Every structure is written in structure tokens, then in C-alpha cells.
Length: 466
Image 1: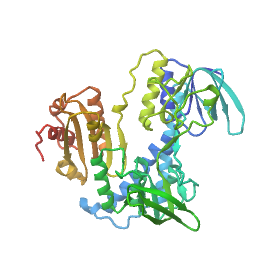
Image 2: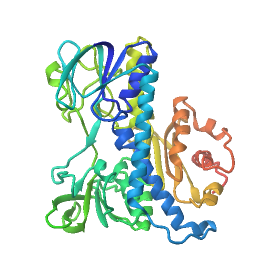
Image 3: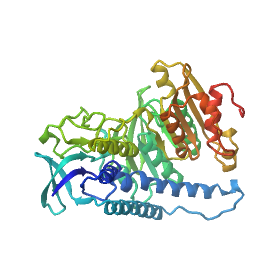
């Protein structure tokens, strides 16, 4: 079989690239060894949000009296939550299958490996191999949970995110190692349905260490109020899995003292490793970084003509929407459409716990480190009428502007539904909107999004409602 384009991997980078290529007139084949949609649709973005929604609904029911509603006898059915999550993921995967048929894209089942001569060798589940050739090949094999040296994942007592979504039994006590988006989301889910959760984070900043320091601090306060234990600036030394449970030995990096935590399970949520092994990179001489990431230019070309790479296997943030954007730019460049390269400073980041976190651009400290003189504004949701009515007064919106020219450098939110609000800042930054222009953009009342306008007003000493 000869194709204009073969994509290895059908995650949010691979399947989006394939569909865009088909729209541009290419004959496309996609190699996938598991379900269409990759980790995102099947084991990441989508099923985790289904679990989080179940936990949020349970949390609402447990606090229904705040809204004038009396509810008794509510119980969390862990097995039913997992089943619903898998059904949601399955439906989304079927949706990608429909899109492939609609766009006349061939699904090639099996594991792909690059071979010389612009070919991909695909081995199916029975061990049978077949070669496919293409003018262009995009590698989009994604990532997996990172295994730490002192935290080997055995899939039984030390688990990764995939296992955390399909446990047969809810643990009574869990240690979550890593306080990034994955760790914080799972910590919220399990705690909300009754599991005792301890988060261990290596970085001193604590929860969500890549976010603005004010957001991390606020999230830490909220999680502690919920009853989640947080050990920041702490390393995992050993995990003893002998016996019925686990004993996690941790060390305070400041004092050097060690302590033990007893639990049923340990969730390793310390980041993502690229799936770049055994796909033939060395056969073609494709260059990689020390971390095993594939080196690419601004249009995702590797050092080998006709071979491209997108998503988690390339340097940059491992985010689904980043991979999708890269895939579109990659195939549009292949088709000669002269697309703009991606502005990685304007990629939003979202964490879907409760409260949610969303951000884009510079943190306050990063802006100062870059040499900017900044104007900073902040508006708390305690002063928002919509937030009060919704019973969601936790959090704030924080904005950062260049004091000289008014450039919107960064926006950071923590609160109810803020992942739906961050696109305003992304779009405004894309259009090079200034602070003064944002001040004149009338926002509807009452809404959570008013907090953006009010935060901008605070940065310019014109805030009304605080």
C-alpha cells in the first residue's frame, strides 16, 4: 500500500493530523495498536474528566444543604463510576472511528516501526508483519507514565494513571507521588469519594509547581482545608510493598529527616515519558535529545527528509491540544500552505480538579525574570456575584501586563469552571490586545468571566468591586 501520508499513532496529535491531511487531498493511513484516540481519549483527558465529574456530583450531593436541598443516604459507587468513565471513553473512540470513515482514512491495526525507504512495518497482534510506504510519515506515538528510580510501577501496589482509572476496589489510603495536573486531579477524585490521600511533591512550591506561585499557594490552602495531606519539598526514598499494603519512606529535603506513610496504593504521577523506543529511530538515524525526545524544527520536520514528529515525543508541554495544533501545522506545511509556526508562550494549561486551574503565558516571576516591568491585577471570586450564587467563592483571576506597552503577558485562574474561561485570554493575547483595550471590553453580568475584566481593572488601578 502506498500513501501520501502515514501517521504512527492515533492520539489527539495523530488523528487530527490525519483528518486535516485528508481534507487537503492526501491519501492517509494511520497505524494504531490499541483503540483509536490514543491515551487522551481512552486513558487520559476524557475518562479522567468523567471520573472527576462523578466525584464533583457526589460532592454536590454531600453539600446539598448549602443550596437549600435535603439529601440523605448518598453513597459513592466506585465500580459504577469506573464503568461510566470507560463508557464515555469508548464512545469518544468510536467517534474517531466515524471520523476516519467520513474522511476515507485507512486504519492500520498493529505496532508500527520505521524502516528504510520511507516505509512503515506494521506487526499485528498475531505477529504478522506487512510494510506500507508513504511520501511522508508523521510519528505521533505519545507518552506514558514516567517511572521514577525509587518508585518502580508494578501495576498492583505501585500504579500509573491507567490503572488508577480501572481499579477493581477503592483504596482506603493512597499516596500520590507528584503534584502536577495528573496527581492533583486524581487526589481530588479519590479524596472526594472517601479515600485518605497524601500528596508527595519534590518541588518546594508544592501543588502545581509549574503554575504561578499565587495559584499554587491558593490550591495548597484549599486542598488542606479539604483534608488532603500535602508534603512539599519532599522526596520518595523507598516503597516497601511486602505484606498487605505499602510503606512509603519519604525525606524532607530541607531538614533531611525521614518518615513513613502507610497506605494501600501508591500512584506514580511524576510526569510523562516519550514512547520513542522500538519505533526505528536508530535505523533511520533520527536525532533525539538526552531525554529521548525527537528533535524537530518549527514545522515538526526531523533531520530525515519526509519524517516528522509531533506531540509528547517532541520537546515542549505534553498537552493534547498542543499535539493537535502541531499536527495541523505539520500537514499544512507538507501541503504547501505556509502556516504560522506555533507560539508556545500562548498555549493554555488546564487542571480539572475542584477548584479548576487554568493559565496561559508568563507567570509573574517569569515575566520579571524576562526583564519586564509588570502591572499585576487580581480579582477574588469572593467578590463575584455569580460565584456567590453558585456557591463557588474559592479562587481568583490574576493578570500580568507589561507596564510600558500594555502587552498581556500572562493570565492565571483558580476557581469554578475557569478552564472554560481561559480561552478569552488566549484569544486576546493572539490578537495582541492591550490592558487598556481589555478594560473597555464589556463583560456580561453576572458571570464568572467578569473576574477577568475586574482583574485587568485592578492592574490599572480602576477596579470597582474590591
